[in-house]
Image (cartoon, rainbow, N blue to C red; front, side, top):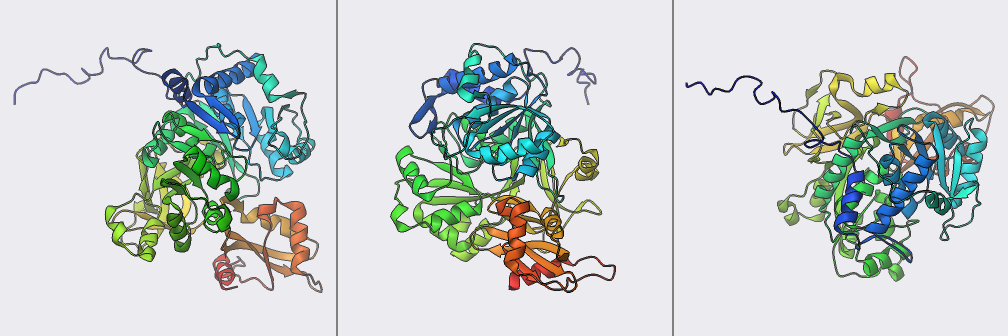
Length: 546
């Protein structure tokens, strides 16, 4: 064979990275581009408010400028407690634009959890909607930190009070839309901080980087078919995995964000019709609410709406009802640690010929990896060898790629365990089918998913154990037609004690956020192994049979 004349390393020698041929990937660039290409296009709709992409970008720049003017910079944490409103969207660009780390707070958490997050994340600024002032006021009283509080005085908010010395619009007035920002310097730089219940009482802080957010947003855009004419309705909370990164994906597509303060079918159906909504996301509870809404609010629209859902698959009856209303259901799977969606149940044309039950069974699977994810594999967690694709052999879903978190904040042991063997361990037990599609069978972490919210069984158990009459307690998921699942508590009382279910439930309401409170309480001895470990799988079977 003739010598090619190319020496090893020739394609690297003198061909170095520089400012002309490389730049950090960041989702901030999506808004900058949209404002340049479509400055007069409607970017955000909220009630009677309309923002063009030019206005959206300038407001984000003002916020970034104002934060920097107050001495904040790279690595500083800015927390926000807000509904799906324009300030929440603006923060998703402004904070990373000035190098900060955005901490979107779950509006359904109780004061103790919020206080822990503010302390653990070391928030320096807290932007908060006045509707959530009761829980924020209590959380601030419990916290050892005193972040600067900025109020969002939204005229559509219901009740509440102003807690800070400055409101959001006044803060924006401090900034300049002409400021220039060079952040991030490195695409691995931290962009946001989100908390997940995990398997412990205290939530774990999941850290995202700019590269992952950029790529997962593009993955969403491609997977969901978002384009310039897309109109996205915010039925999914933006505090969930930064809106599953759709906060950036819709902008990358130069589509329109339709903000929604609360999920209400009487508001959603008119918005779909009047604004021409083409896409939306939500937990199965959202689909159930729409499918079972009163006929008086089920308005007809003349186009198909793509609706992505995650978590427990919706029942076939809900899928059928949604299809009849004009929705096309897409099933996604992911975790907070994977920037939201990591796999999609990609549609196959031959499924259309199947009956509803068979089609629903196909659609309920977690599917195949996103284009922007390196790998999603079902493995034996002990051997780290992929299980056979027989639809029967159980293993754990493992993820790997650029759209997996940096790790857990201030928790090196949990981070190391999550990345053991150079794969991210999801804790979800699944099978792999002959067509390569993944299907989740159980959750090894004992997490309860109710209405799209993760509930740690250990956190609920901890509350139960504080009741003076409770000797032992265990909490598992019980199927719930409306919420998907709800916490079911099995309780053994101390000798000589008596209690009613309502007494236990009332006690838990004083300790936990409402969605975490057990809806079912069963009294009696707990099943245990010979070593004294509570057999939760037995309790799960009992909960299903109740």
